Image (cartoon, rainbow, N blue to C red; front, top):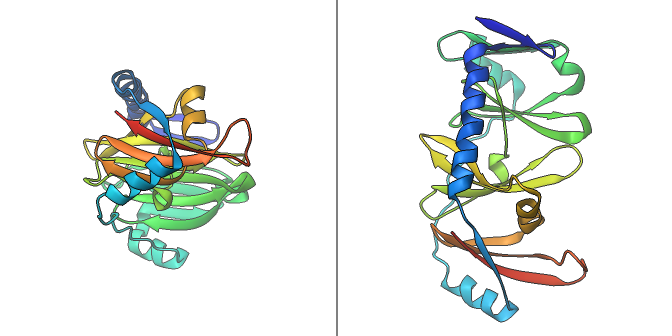
Length: 220
């Protein structure tokens, strides 16, 4: 069964999956508590010196549109109308006039994501499995040592949103960054460094005076 919504044709199961994921996000967020403590610049440097050395996951990226179409075949078509099929050949998204506002940016084969830049340069990442919009650009993610968590951002066309995600059943679920106070905590965090799977440090401009730098230790 199909449903129509705002010019998009999406499987009802994909929409239901979106509802399930939203509920999952809420459940994860209820159980997730991040304790953030302001520290000194000296303490920040000490933590950096103690941080483990590890590699971030390798991200395979295809930026050529023709190469992407050749690799995906019928699963991806963009000729004014965007059409995406899942691995079984079922249409999971069909959106008219998509090309009027969005342009192809990249294809991430391992993640099965296509990245578009849309109005006001907004990030638009679409799952090839469900046709749903996803939050977070994998190119700008900072992964924890065991790659079970990541700090990531998403540009909405006006500002960047910053949040934490956890890998659950091979999908990335938001666990922190939904509420305004959470958003402000991670807003413009830089030099974010994971110390282990449950803690990290970062620095950011002061909310009261952007010329000042504040340093933080976070643990969950």
